[in-house]
Amino acid sequence: MKLILISFFIALLTHAFSYAFASADSAFSAGTSSFVSDSSFSTMPSSTLKLEESLNGKGLHSNLTLGHGQIPLSLALQDSFYVKGSPVKVIKPLETGINYTMLGSLGAAYMASVIAIDRYMANQWWQKPSKFYFSRDYFSKLSNFNKFSHFYSVNLLGHLFSGAYEASGMQALGSTWYSSLSALAYISCVETENGFHTNNGFSLSNFSAGVLGTIFYIGQYYIPEMKDFMPKMSYKPTENLKNKGRIFFDDYQGQKYWMSVRLKNYLPEKISGFWPEFLMVAAGVGLKEGFPDKKGPMEMYVALDLDAEKLPLYGAFWQFVKNTLNYFHFPMPGVRLSPGSAFFMFCF
Image (tube, rainbow, N blue to C red; front, side):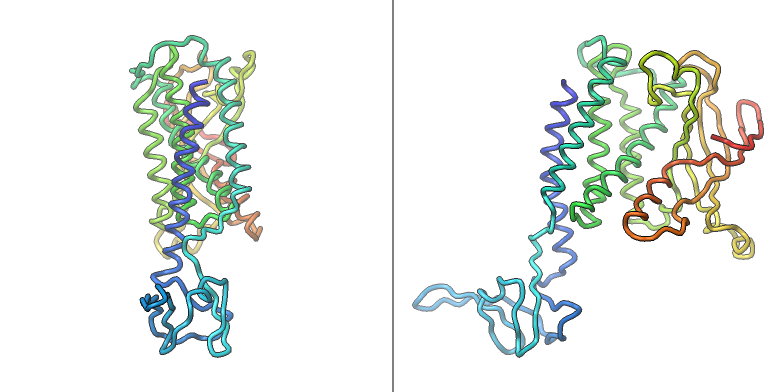
């Protein structure tokens, strides 16, 4: 229940951020002028548009100064008007273009997923309530492995949230920030609930990994070169999944987390020409199989990977599908580096 209440509060808070980000993004796109000509319209005079207010005996009157003439503000408040026979489109920066019906539906789906996770966790992980406390298992194998999980989860959730916000009409800047903060809030709620139950506790290191994942996700928007690096996950079911009530979230030994790189962009020019654009190289970590649940040494891998964005599928929907697939590592030839080296024809 705490998770649901915390999530509801964060949802309200971040909803306010969404409007702020979207408004700022819209205003930024519009530039310093509130009125510009559409690309399909005739060219307007290059003079700066200025709103002038004059006071006369009848009261305050506002006019839009355009070139050497004045236009009543009542016309400027319309969606478009004509200047000497040429149509002029009005851009209103504070109108975000957000589809709040769609955004509300997505918010409802968000809360439904939080409730579902709350119910599942209550049966599996949160059976023994306690006072809030911090976890101190910083150096356990599972705790170290969880750092990669939290880093990855924020990036995947950020991508999914971003697609939802953009479908609601949000611009790229607002979508990037709002989706990343929503993803961080999502896993923070789970971590906070851990703090109220025995055998878990609030892990500062796991939370920090989520913050780093958020920084990485936002960084990809501002630094194009960072898009050459993709956090990914792969999964192959193990015996642990057969335990009653378990799902793949609990099957740690079947999970691997990767960082794939578009190596072609960093090879010398003579070699880069021979390297396929769709082929990536990934470094990954996992937990050794055959040990009791949540135990076992960590393993390190290097494997080939596929760049799903190179699939010949086009359009906004298919681009979203390709971007989503790129958060998962496909079975490809690879090498386990430790403990003990081994070659795998298909490294899951």
